[in-house]
Image (cartoon, rainbow, N blue to C red; front, side, top):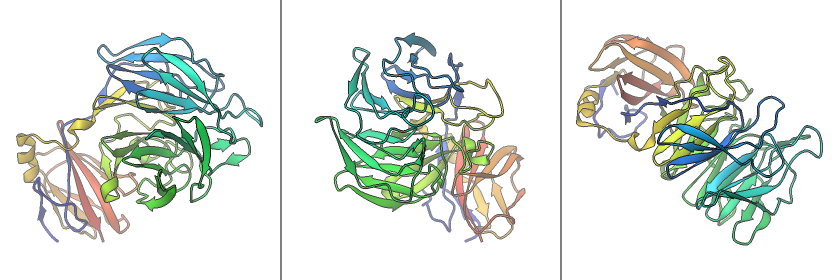
Length: 401
């Protein structure tokens, strides 16, 4: 199809152009009082609680509270468990479940404990430990009255087991192993009655049915990405930042932001982080409709320690003025063999083109209407272009033949 004009009602078809508008972009807030990796955090009304994480060989039990109203931090009493690195946690029903990680290198230093934090009185309670191999950075999702945990790494390699902790009975039960092989530091989130695990040095993504205890392959668009952060918002899963399969943040997809639509089994590319490069083992937390991103190792720019914020509620909203701008947008030819043209009502727009794995392939900082973008070197398939001007961003899908 050629000269495929877009309106706000355009359907998402591979042979036609599809888009979403984003009036909201990432905001940069103040610097947190620490820059660590494997930080863990969760949002509450008006703020968040954050486990500091680790830096180099230093283990930390430091625990912080973030105040959203004035963008400030206060240090609370330390987490009472053993000092550790590479721990993991998730929130359910107003409480946060946290544990695992390691207290050193070598056999016998890998932890399998589980704790719960109650914000109502800011107290920690130790729960029964998992009767499993202790481990670093597994998948852990608290959802529907369960804590689901599996994969991760220990002194002798990676794991692919899967365990269920029942919050009401405080009992651990082994469940069917994660298909696709051992993995560590995968992405993981919940949506509806299912939980999702993917990446972690494996390319496949999977849906786990809690009730039926079955695994199902899903769209694996983010591929083998590893060591980023993830969250759920309104029954959609989001993955953000991380490394590639070789554990390098020096790659185009290191700042990418994607969301999974369970009902349609597909991924969307969202506006990437404004960070200079990606972050390894960062943290995120949700306060209201805002996601906050922080921490992790920034390999290229030491000390870049901003807290970033993005309003998720505005992802699918457009103003009448933005709709008028977007309505005149066209991409042609589609599909294309060598050159695409993106006509926009403005000049000097930015265009970023991503593949289905969220990797940034082409970037034009100052694109003008009618200019061509050479896509001849791209492999055949579907690509996403984010066209930005001022505070408006349109996401456009096109095909390369």
